[in-house]
Length: 132
Image (cartoon, rainbow, N blue to C red; front, side, top):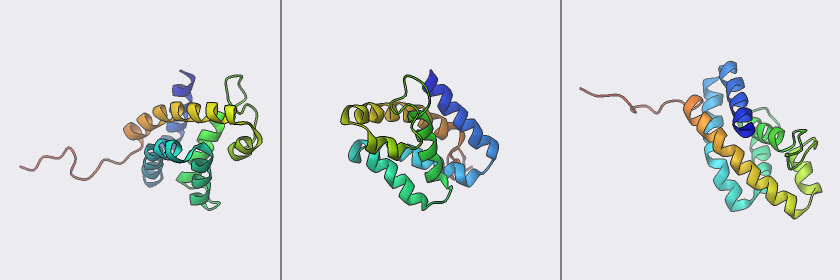
């Protein structure tokens, strides 16, 4: 439930910001990130988000930051508890913690994907429309 609450809070923040194009991109990146994590690993996926952001606070960076906040939060259950930055935490810790963090990232993303698809993604043109 903490995962769901965190993902919902991040979704609400994006909704309140009201940037539909940004939110649509965020939803797309959220949908594809689990596959990237499964194929390449959490570290490569996180580095890819940062690389795509190119130092700018775009939707790639926002997704990285939200995931980082979840995995590095100051709670006992957090894999990288108290770390300041996800990439720093990944390279500073061992394989067992990495695998735990990767599983936790995928679990969090299940909630984020659902919320993003429902509340952030723009409707596709032609979907739901009836031509008479």
